[in-house]
Length: 263
Image (cartoon, rainbow, N blue to C red; front, side, top):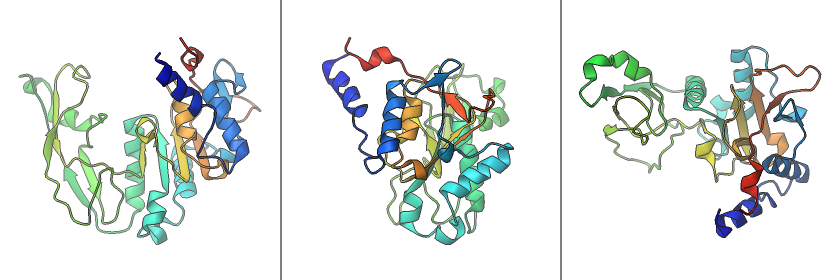
């Protein structure tokens, strides 16, 4: 590891600039990032109770998370400050699409749906049904069906009026499938929710974290939690894969401590 990169990591895990007004939350984030927060059954840590959205049934709990992060959406939907100050983060694209689909359903206004044109290149189109290609949710590509309403938030830099043609797009990872997927679609996504990795560097005053499965990469939980500015405005929904009777809501924290020290 280069000295510069090592210094950046140390600075990030010594001072949390977003949570300066909430010292308790700042200290908690640093313990999570350093991998020193108390663990149980391996690398599970407990999420503080006042940050937890309780899990009962999936649909009910998801709606509770949405209500916590986007209260009174139908009233505030036209307020730019309201929309840009809140986000729900999750680990995978399919979970992000699920949340965006729920929220655009709540968003008032006339809906337009735009479908992509998908194909498999490399001469194997006959082996890949278009219906199968339509189901694929791929990092870096817009969804097959794009539900839009006036004033809904989009993951794209937009002026008041902008012309966006459908363009052919391919995944950045060529070996993702045994064929090359080409999707012709408008190059935008809804962004009520986004992946944790895509949210790096952002400050989100009201942040929800949806974990239908555990994080899977180094520092991913820290990145998600540290987008927020206070524990009161950070809410976490964990769909449990293990029960911790009497020990609250727990989730995996992946930290490779060797990358936090000089090599």
